[in-house]
Image (cartoon, rainbow, N blue to C red; front, side, top):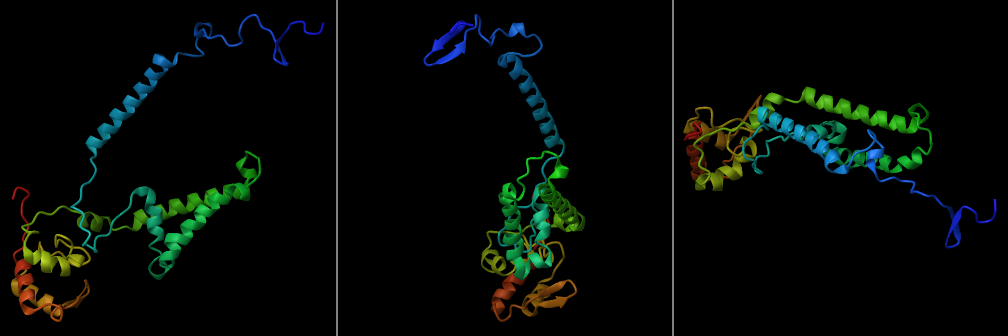
Length: 261
């Protein structure tokens, strides 16, 4: 072969010369192998997306999201429940070594170790093998993480008091007047942290449903109580007799009402 025969010069390089291009843009020459992006490919994508959207809307209508009462930041007795994908962290914070005085361990150190392990993964497992059995470090870390997540999620679901969860978020209608000065100045600051923002119960008992007399409420507010269901401090040293009487009068008049009222 003579020098330069069959070659075409492009600058200082030499590339083979072809009579027709390598890539043929006519899709008709490749039947069944390819298709036009618009409208053929997009039409199928839109159709599948529409099916999933309609199915999701049907599930939403058939099983609507549960609504609870209006959130009240003064109600410290309310125990919120996170979404299912955070239940394992919620359960970890219940353990004695990760809660209370050890909150830093459960909230910062343990998640920090998990995130740190992910960041160090490229150095902890540098093998190029694709078989999971030949990658013990990566496989062990994955199995440990999956095991902890599944077990903690199961334990959180199995041991959670779902009846109490449903009751604390239940929408209750009562004749409570949140514009009443007694409620805003006395009841909200002294009672709602335990008995709930609407006094329907929190860490303390429900004050709306029972038929409480003024004298009964006044005695509890003055002297407090200690029983198997919990304890309530007395307020006779913090509140005046007139203020205690106003609270007792307000609470004794509470009752359940219909939504229409």
